Length: 473
Image (cartoon, rainbow, N blue to C red):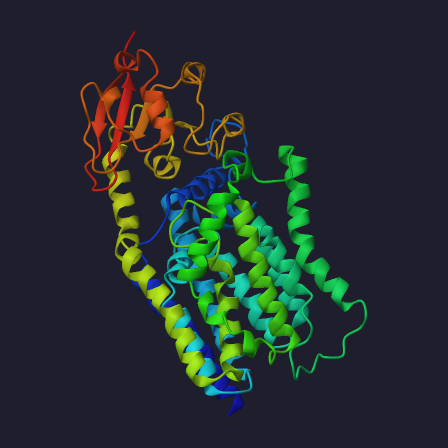
């Protein structure tokens, strides 16, 4: 009976993860195709690089993620993206099953199951599990760390926390805290040797340290290139963390009276979540939608919400969960419909732009993910995410101070610039209102109106790109 109950609960947890992911299966982001192009070049024997004829660069934050996708990438970046989406949602389903079992094993009030509503209504968990980024796996590993920790498997918990931190540097503080949590109340593993905590700490911190050392040996720096390309802004980070706190479910954790009744494991879990929100604030937040940097700790939020509900007053539990769900539903309704059509629009853009880009040899652009799926040409990454020389230029990744000489030095024969949504192309094209500062600066370089001519303009709604071809000399 116990085994059948566990299987049933695990199946319900997996289905609770799958349903919302299917509803938002159309979500992706441009950066997912950056990793996919690295994977395609690996599959084709070109090595770990974004441009097949370019240098090997550290343009993927989770080092080694393209290696995992490479076996599926022989047919190109879009095939790698599909594999990443399947891997992400599959891993999240397994982790959600473990999380549901951990909640079922809690002692206390049945109100604890209400916390699973936070899982079903979470647009970040659903969307990022199927987005094709590494985030789907990071969510799964972090969920396994929380769930296995609650089930008494402390070393496995620490190991999964360490893997998640190796893939996402901002997860390191969270992993370090959760790895040293005391045994849950009633755990059969309560008696542990004195060195066990040190071992768990090593399991959590060891993987990100190893990745940093590998990066240092190969690329000459321990941190991913994205940290150089996107300088942190603590003020923006604080606003980002606050917005995520209000919209993603942590409101269910505001229960000071109930905290006193939590065991040591739950209190450390609470501390780890607080530490992670502080870490993403210091990191400067994120420009991507649907709270990407917070998504990996949301399974821990759900588990802790269940722990609080198991010991708290039922009326207060109902109020907290209702407030938390209100934030989640607001985010789902406000962003969900647009998020669900991103992949469809990107695929349409790629198909439309293959022809105009067919004769290009060197293309300069800010959004290089879809571009890398539309052309095999060499791409100059104006954000610096895959280009160390551009990454160190002043400005953020959408506002780099690109010198006029760089386009000639790189042999750029094609520009791809995005027009701000709601604006139309003007004549001459250099007077158009472009979406980002980098594009505005390039358009304002003297002589650009005669040096580059409009080759094509996309017709996909919300994705107004100009393809500009260098005029014959």
